[in-house]
Image (cartoon, rainbow, N blue to C red; front, side, top):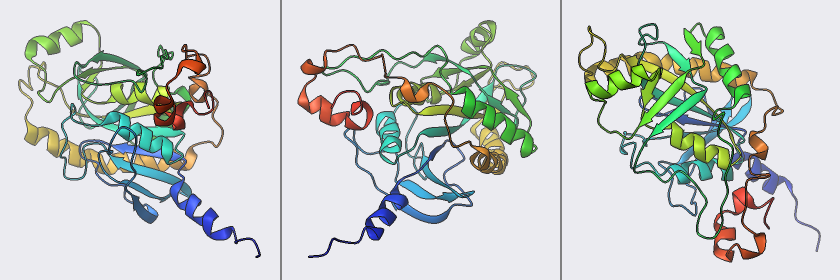
Length: 301
């Protein structure tokens, strides 16, 4: 019997594999401009992602789009299955993740409708699982520089190309939510010299690092939080209005970034686990090996 032709299998793999992952936050529930689109309802060892991955071609490159809160905005920041979301990106073949997130400004010069590309996070979450490890395997990844400098640089240049005012570098403090900050909290955040406040990205960043994915954030500023004397309280109506105005700009920036993203990775993100796993491989339970196969497979078979 002659061997089966390989063309069909290769085509199927090409349709599933993606180079760049895009996680859309509040206000960004789809990615305009995607071509050859199909949905992938992927199952992960950590449960279901927030939504189906939308696979397609953008600016000539294969991308996977995921709505963080699900289409229709159905999950609070604490309810999001972050592990499933990042693992799904890994299964899709993604090596770089662009995260889009709505944030409040903690500085006068960071104005609503402007963007920030943060290079630091501060974690004030309390209810999240922010690691893939445990249950028989321990790993400690480096996280002093929590975002990928190469991808962040591409995002900064993309903002300039798209004529969007963006600030490069800064600290994103991640609170649990879903409530916005109290006035006392906002003043403390400012005293600690944080730049923006959000509810999601630090958890994604930690998991992306463990999964050896490059990760960077487009933080879309919607408001001045509650500290500003002329913006004494944050209203959902104000935020949604600015989100809608930001959405088109964010999509333009993403298209520019995807177009300009270099093929090779010049960072260390893809080797984050090389010296991080401290458990004796012989002692890792078989079930844990299977669950983490997409992440640890090249280190522990």
